[in-house]
Amino acid sequence: MSLRTRLVLTLGATLLLLWGLAAAWLMRDLYQQVEATLDQRLAQSARMVSGLMAQLPVEVWEQADRRALSIPPIEGLACQVHSPRGEILARTHTDMQEILKASEPGHAYREEGGVTWRVFTYQRNGLTITTADRMDERDLLMANVLEVAVVPFVVALAGSLLALWIGVVRGLKPLERLRDALARRHPDALAPVATHGVPHEIRPLVDALNALLARIQQAIVREQRFTNDAAHELRTPLTAIKTHLQVARRVEGEAARRALDHAEEGVARLSRTLDQLLMLARVEGRVHFEDGEASCAGDVAELALRDAAASERARVTRPSAWPAGELAVPRELAITALRNLVDNALRHGPEGSPVAITARRDALDGTLTFGVRDHGPGVAEAELDQLPRRFWRASPQQGSGLGLAIVAAIAERFGGRLAFARPEGGGLEARLTLPLTTGPVPPARPESLQGINDNDEGNPR
Image (cartoon, rainbow, N blue to C red; front, side, top):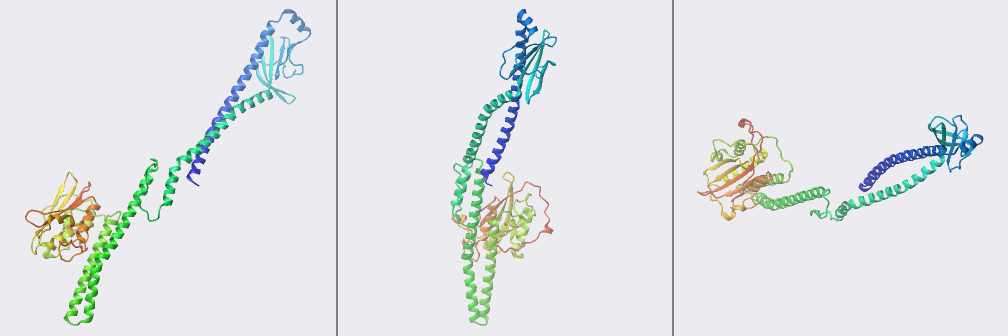
């Protein structure tokens, strides 16, 4: 059933029910009012006859003792006057003895010959006046009154139903236009639906639809970018592996062994690149990313350094105490981001030079900033903004060029930021700012820390 039909049926049935109840109420009150008015007219007729009888001269009364006076009849109304002795002094009909006989004062119903009469008996100065109305005359009058009242009522009801239908049809026009617009859209069209002229009640629906289209478009862009990145980055190591294997097949001895070693290095590089591409797609694509574990600065730093070789870890300096606070970032991603920064600093700083990790909490912004500084040659000021770009390399060293892109994607995903600076004394400092939660901070338990074996590389500079 369509929405328009459902609305019309629901509102129409409600309208008919309410109007029907109101009409029944009005008809009942109208019938009671007409009945009371006719009874009042009947009583007034009896009182009028009583007043006229009191004004008759004496000779009329003397004549009434010998013969009952005849009162001119009125259509549908009968009257009869009895003396204190029960004699009939005056009457309008001679064939209604039972209907007009004297009885207790007040109104009553009497029937004779299949005709029902409404009778009123009145007593004054010893006289008993009885008046009567035919009920069929009353019913005919009531039918005429109802006809006059019902015809406008029915016309008004029909007009209301017509106005209801027109109002529903016109009110649902925006939905029909939206349906037609969506039906005419090309399946590949992801442009937002126009909201001009859309009623406020439908605006949330259109906004939700546009948000869904935007997410679909972003997902398609991410898929295309992932495909392009994979095709771009995997072509070179695959070609190198294929070349080394061909060389190993043609030569023997030490040359074949070197060729196989180079092929193995290419496979390792290819594996690392694939891991980084998958991590980047995972960070950019997932709607929810929770690992259920608290993410504190000290834990994140210790786990980020756990994967580095012992000789390399000795080059890293860290503060004696870490700021308190729980990061509003899943621990796995926070560790991956900080480890990529540390690996990048260890890889591109001079051999044996120190790498410093700092952490500073900003209570006003509710953030925590990790700083990772090396003492290498650094990069030019104009190239600082290029560092988080995918596959961008500032040096010929091997690397996928995705490490810093992953860090930037993690920071952006959770409302943080990644920035680079050239500190005094040379080198490069990466500053990773991450938001903090407002909940309580659980105590750090170094004995429970576990390493994460993602072999992400930093961007070569």
